[in-house]
View 1: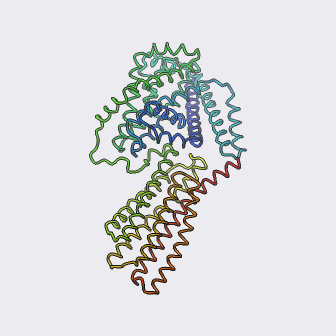
View 2 (view 1 turned 30 degrees about the horizontal axis):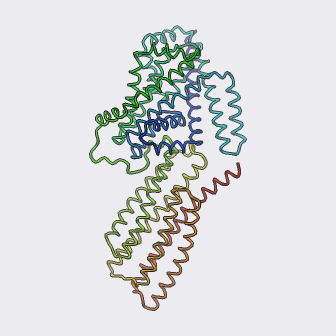
View 3 (view 1 turned 135 degrees about the vertical axis):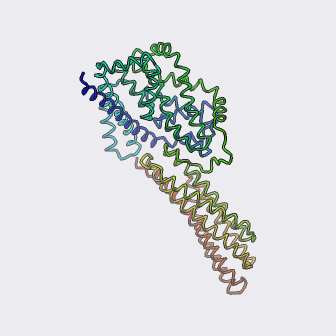
Length: 547
């Protein structure tokens, strides 16, 4: 074999690997659109139970087709204070298991049946108008592309087995498994995908270039190589997040160290599971990862304490100020879910501002007015950061419903921010009233209190609809907003009558009428929030009818 031919064959292998990684990315994005939101909710509610945590990690890694993305998302959850460091360790143990599913899949030799998969997936996606059908077809197409990429890698690798230079390299690390581990580490470090590395090893094994011993060494190295990105992500993160990235690295390195002295007997055991080399490599990958994960289960507490000793707490460090963190962007569905939680938290802060502004105005409490003004700064900061975060979420990796909801959340943030501004206006009216000695008549006080209560109830109902996505709550908030409009006109007329009769101070006119106006505008924004929730529900209903 000439050097040029060897280069061409090597390029074919690399091209096949690139196609495989593209197919995996396509599969990940499609699976994310189908059930990524469910996976995000599972991660969001993960408990201290190690088995449940491992299950969540395995499911998340299968959906993302990348343990790196799962761990990076975990770092984001820990950074945001949503998940404890201990909980993240349980989930990352499951992520190691989740990576084995792809290896088991690509170990199948389906012959040329990848062509029907590609045809069905492509034309089904082209001619279908239903999003669920289109996504299913995209999954089928991605699977066909994965098997086609495997075939390209095998086709390119097969002639390499005739190269004396290549065979010498393979034999050298076959005799010294540590070399294979290092090679696997480098490949996975470059591709940032243990699935791609393992699939390449399976392809090489399928054409007889490497044996089981060498394949095991490579896949062990692949587990270590995927840790580089997590370690890099830990730089500049919070202390718990740093511990998460270090724990992932320790798990993989210690796991390899445990198995390293037993590679030969381990290979002998794996040979009993199948007569087919690719399947043996896939089984070795599965057994290795599953055993390492379960070996660590009893020692999670010890690992946590070691990492806490290695990376001590920082004095004054703030963890969990926001529900979101930029590392969550690796899993857009999780990012959207946590952004929504931050929006809800901010809406509850503005509801508190309405309550405080009422007491500040009617009870003449300047301290409460100052609290409202302070809360307004926090609300503005939260709204700005949340809007920037939502803008960074990749819309192309979201389903159509999720993309619509992402757009609506941006609108809702604007409404919430305006509610904060309007509440601050009322607090400033309270300060003005105290400064200028302005008083309301008893009738005026009771009427404005009545307006506050109705507006507060309306906004609270809109927030409830936002939290629960309940159509009935959204409709009720919209109805209540109509009542606010009627009450505002009624109270304005009554105030004008009192002013004409000299019952109310002339100086109270501006404060009273502007307070009514600001409260009515708050109810308008509550109406906007409720309409966005209601329209989202109606969009889903129409989609079901069309399907």
